[in-house]
Length: 265
Image (cartoon, rainbow, N blue to C red; front, side, top):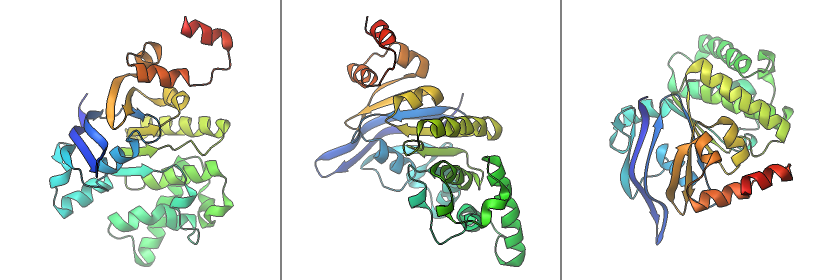
């Protein structure tokens, strides 16, 4: 399996604090790589470096073989089209005065020609309808406003917007943490289905190990800006090697005390 993303010696320093401290990490094409850790472990800073929303203090990120931090403006624009993000709180990432058709169409207007004017508007509505259908919503909903949707529906809209320009990589930053458990399960099923249908690669950032166990192929555990363990998901949850990973797993609630005792034994 080829690597879509390669991070080498990646470091981000804020004064005396190294938020990301010498990270070497690959994201393989077509996989879901989860990055987990407590608040302050460096997960968010790592994703901001990957998306080139911040510049590193040292190290490199290669996307599809090209150095992300050495790209000229035109090449960077193309790379950013291929890297989209779904955030934790979908409502805060939407303009409440825009209709859903404009929310979902925003990347298309930014990145694709022929999407302005009367003809462009008709194309946009058709494309937005297709995207809403792909995430399990009715195309007829595109004239509504964000406040008219539930949290789970708004997250589906965020996913539709991320898919609008047919990206290769989707960064999922705590995409289910604001949802209740039943809606979480539905969104995770949707993400898995979309990955199969469109050949997507996911970087899934979360502190919720129960969610990570359901969706991840591999898991990178971060602590104090460093990756302290990297393993296939089944192996990491079955036999974690690092003490910090075991501490995180021990903190996951288990409704079956007998199962908990078996794990501890």
